[in-house]
Image (cartoon, rainbow, N blue to C red):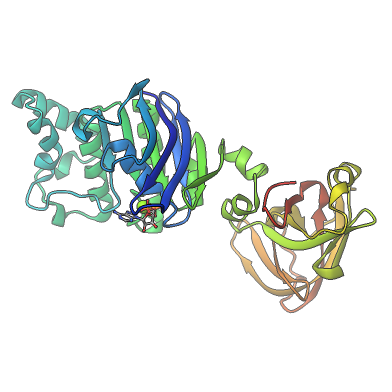
Length: 362
Ligand code: ADP
Ligand code: MG
């Protein structure tokens, strides 16, 4: 068990190109923390800095209040699971799992005990004599997990460990890793580009873009209150509808008047200084409904391009003649037809507003 702290950490692979820029983060003891962001934003670099596999350009990293900048990887008491599993192909599952312990000169009896115990936790007891090429993707991933947990390090690092699995197995392993965390209660730092993984797995999430932290918080706090335009568009599926707008006489004018929405009194106050300025208005697909659910709902007439029935919900792909707008509803209305015009209802109370220039939340 350990806590981890990044203090003003920056990384340059080539001079003056910062792929991680002034990164600050406290990971609590026993926490499951997820770093999420698009490919190339610096997630793997941050993990590798923590593991000691890359040199820090500026700043300090602490594990349990001890600066580890000059401590080699093998002495950091960390283990890492990679996307490509990194198993030794010529070794059996048993030997793959035992390898790290052997290096550390654990006695044979102890190794046998630990491998069996770990194999039991991960349900791979029957696979111990197989070689990696005789395993499915999910089984390989379990072995990689086994190899990481067998030493009971104080911090686990995961770098997109589920990306090579098919969708169904990914969902399954997601819950397996969470269960493992509940059981081991070890500090885990988990990297993914997949916002669903981040939302479902993290105690807290750090959203990163271009090496810079955009927002840090509990999944639902980030979902309900995104700090900026980028986070709003990145977290959530289907994505939040983000529309060009301006304010005129207490009304939100979207797409030069294609949609007009009277604002609530509190919103008028918040947006007062944005008169005559372009802003971005955001609304999540589930906050657009096909029924008028009360006083905060405003009817908007839109064209329906396509709809998708997903069983428990229906996605309506609408447009106002300028932008596409997605509505997610659980009300199946057989009267709805493709290529129709439809009145849907925006829950004005649930709208988000962002500055156009900075992208920051208003
Ligand atoms: P992510 O894991 O979020 O996809 P990475 O941390 O792998 O991002 O990479 C961040 C940036 O650093 C990318 O622009 C990448 O090209 C660059 N980068 C990563 N590793 C190296 C390296 N060893 N040398 C030079 N540039 C690198
Ligand atoms: Mg990466």
